[in-house]
Length: 103
Image (tube, helix red, strand yellow):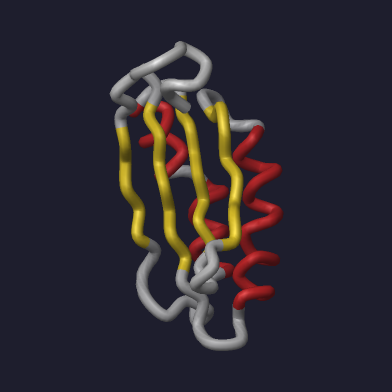
């Protein structure tokens, strides 16, 4: 079963564009990692940036979390976030159709 992750980034005042710019190169890099099915950022109405991820397995997600791309990303975000990134792992509860009932 795949693993869904949300990561919420809360930029300090005036740093939204800098946070988005720091996230952008990580997206392309992580798309090449084994097990990455989805890794995308979205702007929330409250000024946060929400990353939605989908991984083939928890093991591959763990490898991603320990990888160089995440280390570089964390370094590039230093001083730009109001609070630490809020990361949540989710497991789908399929309902409805297979294509619409789960990410």
